[in-house]
Length: 101
Image (cartoon, rainbow, N blue to C red; front, side, top):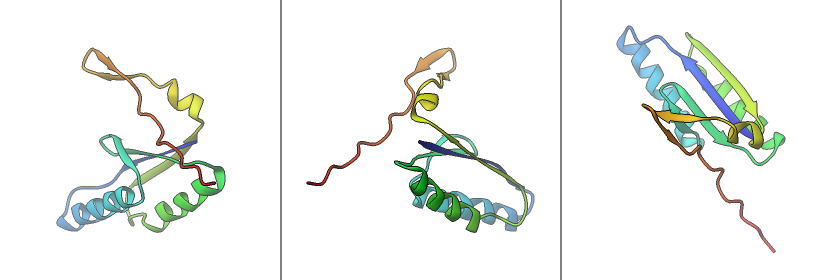
């Protein structure tokens, strides 16, 4: 499953910019990668794991702005079409899962 966090945060004052940077850094430290400006995604191997990461995002929410979290299946994420200009690029692959024996 993929968790996608989309956000619009104010960037008026120096305080707003600092809060934006702090929120973005929390996402990056938690394993999210930028899909687009203000849109970050993270692969989660299970629903339980996605709930852990959702709680981390909620704890880091800035006092102002709009943040949305959506969870999509592997199949739904793979159906996403990504374009850079008019050139199509392949959608991000989920990370390889480790197997322990």
